[in-house]
Image (tube, rainbow over the protein chains, first blue to last red):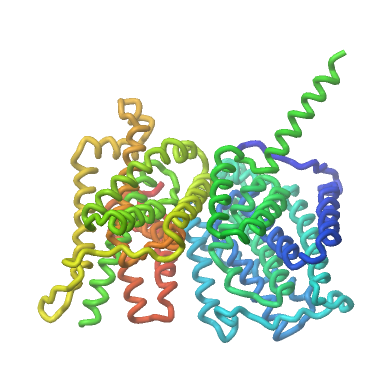
Length: 336
Length: 287
């Protein structure tokens, strides 16, 4: 995996220009789903929130190669931060979102200071330990976090001071969609900037980057913190749309599920996170209503299959097909 | 004093169960350099096979134990040949994901056959009581666990340090390609080591079923525990894994007795501290 995959970004003296059609597609599909399934908005909002979380994991894992099982810690911390801020200080959702992003980022920065000194299995275990410790602290500090029952009574104020969060979840859905699209754009800009290229360089060959004069540790710390910020945003969206921040967002299992979604979609490109989340959650939504353990068969088989047969995920498969079709078309075009 | 002895007995026997289950994982991870999240799954399958053999066929505890260890070791051979072997050369993430997928399939399979509740594994009557020595009562079952753990440790030490098989294993750990060049059949060695690790997991699963009860969620519930023992001990060392298992077992038990408020995180805190200071584990070699 030494190739550097650039999306169709063009470098100009003005900085990195990224075409916006991907964001337009996401926005269009989101709006289409809004009008097609008006009765399932709670589930769809959940999909958007999870997609943002998996996107933040994609930055950390797919771009910089940091394999973590503790990423949900920053989602959970973001959720609690947004909830506490809304209850005790200010109910404006945007302010809550920014506070949550800050909290997630600071938590990732502080934990990253310790975690990122290791890598491989040790890092994986430390990340698990970190999320478990956070989970238990939140569980014990019931007076602040509500413990096992979750932090309830989060009532976000009207969005931009004008749009109330309604009972049907329409505002919440559109708000989540907006945050997701903007975050996707920002993350893509980051990935195509020199900073993102360096991160991919670190994933391919750590030693080489440090030989070239790059500070691997600081880069990883920066990208890890950024991942924490976006995971915090996702946590805030979850708390604001559901009105409750709970322990389930702060769990090892949630981290694991996010990892599965990411791998299913494709690790190397950001939109793999979006595809994987949608595929995973829709299948889960259908299969889990039948029997939760049978669902495990499907998800287990999907995982084994995607590692052995589809190492680049659904997105990678689609790209391979697209490339071979394009070649065939070109070859045909060259024939007289 | 009484409390201290209780903590020690419970902690050490708990640590021994962790040791028996985790040592196979430590060996395969040290030798094969592959992350195996599904190791606890072998312990789980072993426990369920033993429970099935005793409940359905009326097999005695000892027979069920042997049957489950052999069956799990046999079962692990095709798994190693068909699945694990393909990811030895891949990165840690692929290994993690493949084996997590295996956990899910194992859990679903066990649930399909045994249902989603805890399946009891009865211990024989002669192990049920306790012995009193100098005013202290020692449950016989915990003494069995202790003996089994020490037996496994001694047996493995002998196997690795004193037999031709052990020499091959050590050679392959140090440098697999050179070992292969001088005639060690490393693929066969890997299969054998993997099967041995799985068999030991089954042994620990059956013996430890009173402490870690058998349920379909077992493989995932205790996964972190086994991995913690292995990483804290340092990969591939029998002594390191034993020390780490006993340390974590005693810390966890002591926290449950003395500080119930933080009991559920004591183990993780200990792991966090050790791994922050010594990323390769207590006895791990620098990689």
